[in-house]
Structure formats: structure tokens, C-alpha cells
Amino acid sequence: MERRKFITVVGTAALAAPVLGSLTSVAANGNAFEGHKFPELGYAYNALEPYIDAQTMELHYSKHHKSYYNNFMTAAEGTDLLKTPMEQIFAGISKHSATIRNNGGGYFNHSLFWENMTPTKKDIPAGLKNAIEKDLGSVDAFKESFGKAAKTQFGSGWAWLSVDKSGKLFVSSTPNQDNPLMDVVDKKGTPLLCLDVWEHAYYLKYQNKRADYVDNFWNIVNWKVVNDRFAAAHS
Ligand code: MN3
Image (cartoon, rainbow, N blue to C red):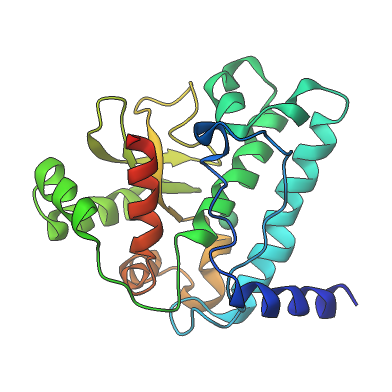
């Protein structure tokens, strides 16, 4: 029923990727904010195999992510938050409830996460590659640093590549569903690439071996999307 309907949506979406392209750039582009939408997945549940298995993708997207979205929308009902872009909400997240912070973060972070993965291996575009080399030493040094952030984040959380206000790239990790846009985190910036290291993101396939999941992530990064986010953050 619901599952069949979803598969149809995925099939259609796959032809029209990228489907989430405007998520972070709505406000930046000056377009009217059209409300918080649960995003379509730009590929099938099994598209990222063998690195992320189909069952994990289905549960993660249709159950975990959907719950964050639904809970956020329920908590936001009847408030201005429904008319406020997530970036703006996060900039003042310290003034909101834990429900808004956790579920708003969960809704937003996963939307970024699905979009920055792809079944089609991509090279790192020159603009982003040059910036990584300038700010983080080399692509290998960046991967090492990002991998370390992902592997050593204690408990549930996320690893990030972001760009700060001065245009400099940095790597960080956040607990729970926090992200670099939130006023409560130490290292603030615009997220370009994220990796979910909650156990629900990898446990079915990798069990306790988070490091293997993190190392395999490099096979499915959508560098074009990361580069596009970098360019948008600059313009
Ligand atoms: Mn998750």
C-alpha cells in the first residue's frame, strides 16, 4: 500500500534527479519559501548497495526520516516555524524546544544526506578540490580528518564538511541531530557534506564496525552536489 506508492515515486524521481537541489538554497536564492517538504529519494532503496543495503535505506528513509519530519511538523503546527526556512530556525535553535531541535535537525540532516550520495561514482570537481587542498591540505588529508570525525563521534551523531563565513572549509562532528547551522554548536558554517553515524544508519549490515561503513562512504559520495553547495554558499 504505502510501500507500493513509494516505489512508484522513487521510480519517477530517478529520472528527474537531482530532486532535492533547492533544499538549502531556497532562502539564499531569494525564492519564496514554499514550506517544509518531506523530500523524495533520488534513487532506489538498493541503489547504494553493496555499501548501504536496501533494507537499511528503506527503514532509514521511510521510518526514521519520516518520523523526524512528522514530529517536527506536529510540533511546528500553528506557529511561525511553518513559514520559516530551516536555516533560519537553526540560527536561533537555542530559543526552541528539544523537540524542535531534534526533529527539525533530523528532518533537515537526512534530506542533505540522501542528496549527497549517489550510485554513480563521481570525481571531485576542480573548484571544490582546489578549496580542499588549500584549506585542508589534500583530498586524502580531508578524507582522513572527516573519517576520524565520523568514527570518533561518541554515540549518535553526524560528521560534516562545511564552509564558514570567511569561505574556509572545515570538518566537524555533532551529537544527536545537531548540525553546523545551529547556534548551539562550536563550529558554525554551511554544511556541504554529511554522514549519519547513528547505529540505525549502518547496524543491519555492519553491526559494530562503524569504521567500515565510514570507509565505504567514499564510494557513494555525490561530489557534484557537494561542489554545487559550495558554489551556492559562495555566491
Ligand atoms: Mn539517521
